[in-house]
Image (cartoon, rainbow, N blue to C red):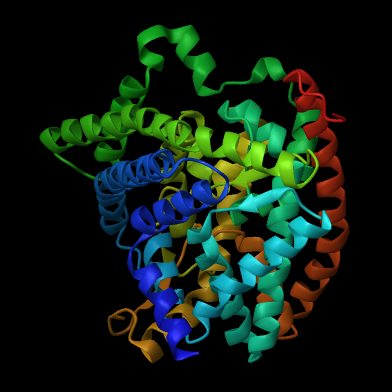
Length: 454
């Protein structure tokens, strides 16, 4: 057991930009690619990941600092500091049973592929950490490690099912064939799909104000670098910056919005040959069964709608944080609320008006869930020494993946009546979601000219 733990810990310590390219290269070779081409695809993916991380860091450091200055200027005391996703998941990996999640996810994926439950081969191994997070939180709250792993297994199955039910939606949004999206954040659709489905009925498509239409109507002011500059300047003003720092922040925000789609093209370059090899591989061994490669969400990062809304939502997040009764979290590391806005982008097909309505509803939920889990992340950090906790403060994760589902699992496990009610409600919601989203996906297949029967 110790040797197995050391092996997986060694892989984890390599970091996503090294670990995932190794996985993709090996998968490419197994799928029949020439080793050199498989290595090229893997390294291109690593370059894309590094590039995306740098651009995200630029945005978080520049915009995040200005937003924090805005909060500091108000004098509001919020005792739980938001770590953001990277430190939070790194902290979860310090849990003593974390390393077991690798074989659990791989074995379940293979079994479900063999029995025909899924067509998704999930190569997004870095997000095993999200299953570790779910298992840890439920185990810590309930006191049962077995229950924690059981909830993580449910999450794995749901992710694969969701990937199958949205594969053509993803192709329409990304332009990349043969991939799917088993990222946990998209399970937020279980709770947000009824809202977006209602908005589809009452909000005409003519009211769509997504970034592409804005660019078409206002010309240069709709370009990524111009939009980023304007929004960055506004945030700098709200943060109390002088004119020099305001302009610098505007340029930095414009730079980030410009670089996102450029870096995103690398994901297409890396994944297309692997996807093609997987298709041929499965045709030979599964009698033409159409398998998809399950990847991380940045394959859609070239679209500017979610980035623009993330930036616009930052002042709203702080207004909620300051005035929302019962909130104890100071948003910082997770200011770019990816795990709310990107699923809304996915569900609404990039309609920014509908995304904005969903964001206004979802932000308070994310703050309350972050407040609920703050003591548990803090205790883990203190017990394992995985992070330093300043005296009188707590650690939190605002914008957690599937915040709603994780709260339902965890709070219900400690016999919280409200959470148990929501758990019961979640079952019909999940059935309704998967059936409805699959029906929509078949329509997208027709629009793409794909013969699903074949």
